[in-house]
Picture 1 (tube, rainbow, N blue to C red):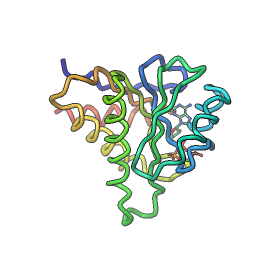
Picture 2: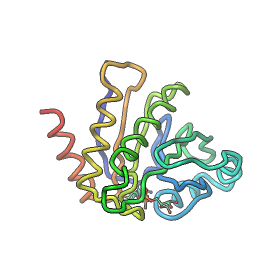
Picture 3: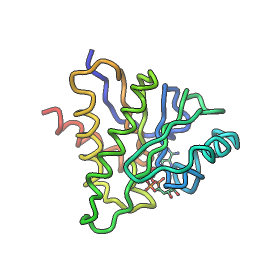
Length: 172
Ligand code: AR6
């Protein structure tokens, strides 16, 4: 069965999936945006575990428990800071999606939700980021059956409209 890949508008902390992805920073010690929301909703035990993870370079991912969340696990990935596009930002962003999905499959997690990594505080233009996100997920899931569902969890209606457009275009 091919993976069901779709986009929704909502708060990623409320999703009941095997894994949700956090757009973290390289310390993995929390911050603003979706990172702050996930730490607040999961509770202080998450920060305790994250301290033991020892950070994460941009483009890679780490896994933790999900504590008070309904999801089973949290995958923390560190997107690139947008610096104009000449600093491997596109490649690093694609690598975040790939590494996160790799971690999910290695841990037997079949359903996963992504926020729009790097497009908040880190300033990656959404019109460039969404096609990279969609392409990376389609490439990773193509021909494999260990991922059943991938959700692009958009915070705003504007983000959702763009993801829907990109998903439609990728399928035609
Ligand atoms: N559910 C889903 N998406 C959300 C939520 C939520 N609860 N809250 C925000 N977003 P950002 P980045 C969206 O800034 O650009 C942190 O301080 C938000 O609207 O969270 O990768 C980290 O510690 C945007 O579309 O992440 C890092 O220092 C998207 O999530 C830095 O920000 C990503 O925005 C990472 O910056």
